[in-house]
Amino acid sequence: MTATPATGDADARLVRLTDHPDRDAALAALEAIFFASTTRTDFASAVERAAFMETWTGWFVTHAPADLWFALAGNGTVIGYLTGCKDSAGAVPLDRTIPKYDVFADRFAAYPAHFHVNVRPGWRDRGVGRALVDRFTEDCRADGLPGLHLVTGVFARNVAFYQRAGFTDALQRGPLLFLGRRL
Image (cartoon, rainbow, N blue to C red; front, side, top):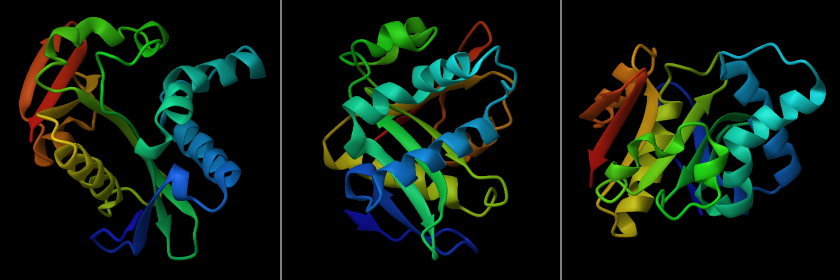
């Protein structure tokens, strides 16, 4: 399925990983955007760097490729991505892969789906991330899910972005912030 979002001044279209014409190129772009977006920059080795990437994206690529969306610029360049999971409680072994994944497990029944979104520097603040979040939200609504959530840092710069996107059910536990949206 392909969708054309309203992305502010960005002319982009959204494509699932399962529909992308060049899976390897899409995943290479995901890796580049991931490392351009993460706050961790130091790795002891290439193996450690690859393991870090696998921790945060590997499960989604393997187990939920239809819930992995890419935003493509008019020329086909990947400018953002969203990795999603529609069953947080049943996403084994994700609960053993992502650190502190289970901190908000008591919220998974009301908000079963979760996601991670990143946009390429230079394309941020142009509606790309919001288009990806809205696309995944519509998928979750169409599947009859009661809500979706994300977890971020209490002081992360993205909190206001998610609140504007309707993620207003907030719960803090330590340095982590759960943000949920009912559908």
